[in-house]
Image (cartoon, rainbow, N blue to C red; front, side, top):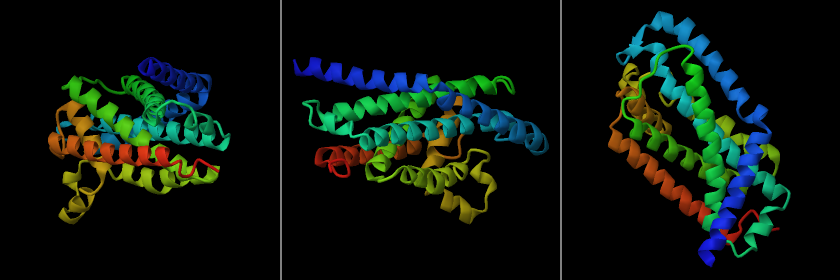
Length: 257
C-alpha cells in the first residue's frame, strides 16, 4: 500500500511540474532557443570562421555540446529553484512536509520535473544547432547518461538554493555570481589545452568542466578530461547534494515557520 501511495504522490508532483513547464512554455522553452541561436550566430559563424578548427572539429561543432550542457544546467537549476521556492513562498510545501509522503519521494518528484525541463530545452538546442552544423553522436549512452546525471545534480543544487532563499532576489544570486561564471569557464567555448598551465590547473577545480567534457566526449568522441573522472565528479556531487537535500527536508530547515 505504501508503495502505491508513494507512486501516486510522485506522479502528482511530476504532473504538476510538467503542467507548469508547458503552461509557461514561452518562458521555459522559447528564450533558450533564441539565446542559443544568437550564440551559434555570433560564436559559431562570426568568431568561429576566424578560429577554424578546435579539437579536430569545426568550431561550430565543437561548441554545440557545451551550449547544450549550458542550457541543461541553467534550466534544470532554474526550474527547481523557482518551483520549490514558489511552493515555499506560498506555503504549499508545508502540506507536503506534513503528509505521509516520504521526503525522498518529494525530492524525486521535483527533481524529475527539473529533469524534464532540462532535457526538453537541451533537445530544442540540439534541433536549433542542426540549422548551423551537422551532428553525429559518437557514444549515445555516454551522451544521455552525462546529460541526465548533470541535470539531476543541478536540480538538487537548485533545491538547496530555494530552501535557504528568503526572498525572490535570493534565488538569482547563485545563478548570477556562481553558476554563470563557472559555466563560461567550464570549457563551453574552448579547450582548456589552449590555456597556460597555471590556468589549466585552476580549471581542474571547476566541476562543470568535467560535465561539459563528458558530454562532449559522448557527442564528438573528444575530451580534455578522462571519462572516468567526469563520472566520478558528477557522482560525488550527486551524492553530496542528495544527502544535503534529504537532511534539509527531514529537518524542515528554512521551510517551517
